Image (cartoon, rainbow, N blue to C red):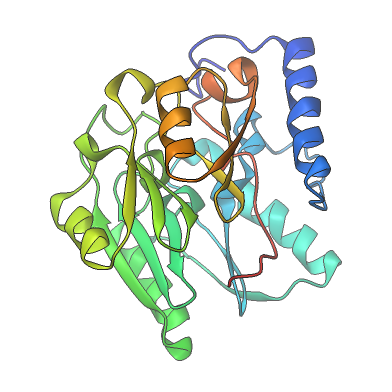
Length: 260
């Protein structure tokens, strides 16, 4: 856990209870859960399964991890997708890097991607090439240095879509041009306060439009979501989320959604 830059050692039994409760919340919402198989090649970070792939309407894009310790994850996912009959659209290849936490769908034809320490320009160029035949626009957001290369910082650290016109954002770290682009497109922003950024108030999983799942301990953001017309569910994530820097979006890799 130290080499992976966790805040402290996860407590195994407590982590298992948290994860069981997390999955229980998903199941009670009628969500079908599939689990990626275990592998001795994977690190503790593989818990955050969002990062190794991107889901599109045209197949899975396998990522190439910007964090070297996570490099085996895309191949492990490839084996699962192949056995499950899920089509693969393509892969990001070295020297390109791209992680799933750096991308967010704004609509069916627009994908936002963060350019930072985990996703580089070559990875973004490969992503654009894979999506160009489907006329999908890739919008690039230049991410800040913030705490440096070793930190867990993705685009989805500061942006979570929760409806077709509503985003949860942490504006102090949001690129100005990208933030203005979102406003010009008509998005409303639920602003996360500084006090709730490190506790992952900005990492919110939309179970359906305006039905949100987030880590407990972010009351201001939770209330602002409710004021925006959202229903909010919370889970205890001290072990599975806070220590490793991965909220509910990170813990899941949605494979099928209906967009209305």
